[in-house]
Image 1 (cartoon, rainbow, N blue to C red):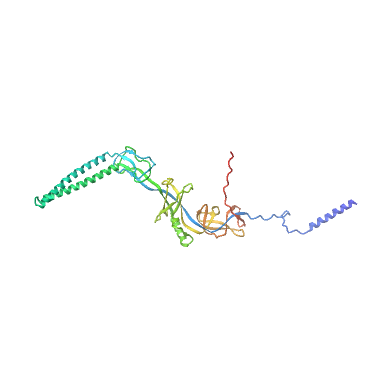
Image 2 (image 1 turned 60 degrees about the vertical axis):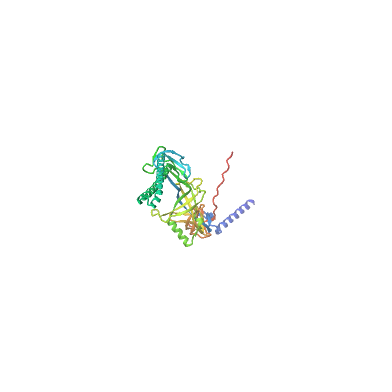
Length: 398
């Protein structure tokens, strides 16, 4: 009895299995092996920056070189043997400070001779003056001839001229004595001595002895392409850019080759009116204070100058802009996730961000990270881009 019941249950289960196999297929997609198909992959995430207009001062960074504010070549103005050198090479000197001493013995002797000549001329002048004064009443009384009186007056005037010549010779001799002590014409830093003690200088030519340069303040000469100047003027005329205030436009900053910024600001003082036909560039000059003497003549530097202001500029991180030789572009994500390439116009940078003037509208999403995840026209999922922050290092264990 029990065995027959068990067989009945098996038959019932077989019937149910056959009924299930006969049922129509469900709506679930099946793979080639008969299993369910995998779900479609989610769109990849890319970090985007939402554009926003802002007012940005456009700064131009140009190459330049430093030049001494004043340069004076110290030269021997009289001939002679150098006896002493009164300065340390590379030191600061004051204006009129004695630098070299040339043997002045011949010039002192010449000065003494001219002084003696002056004394002789003054004695002759006294005698001639006395004679002319004595003859004056005599000629009025017709006691002497007219010729004698004229000769006396002529001798008096000749004596006056001799005194004047003697005084001029004394001044010349005194100048030669003074020139024997060679002094610095300006205050500044003196270079190396170009002669040594015992050297004969000024014999037949003006001998250079040293160079003094004033480097506080100091000039910085830099150049800008004439095409950039014309493009800037065109943008200003079209109203896309606004002129910078004169106070801001004349203020310039300076960067060293290693990227550090010079502590003091300079003033733009000169802009050439001509374009160099060889390079197509315009020369400009700025003046910087240099109290610590950090800037030396001939250094290569970078000069930052503010030339205009963009009222509707967009700042983008540098990795968001795809730069090529002839154009710049960005990847823009639409509301449906589709990505398109957009050409833009970049005008310089500000604190590590590119300044975009044309090609974008406010509120658009520009890809900043995740370029490698994008494939063709496949949609993406935009997420807000977060700039990388420096990770603090753990302190070393004692």
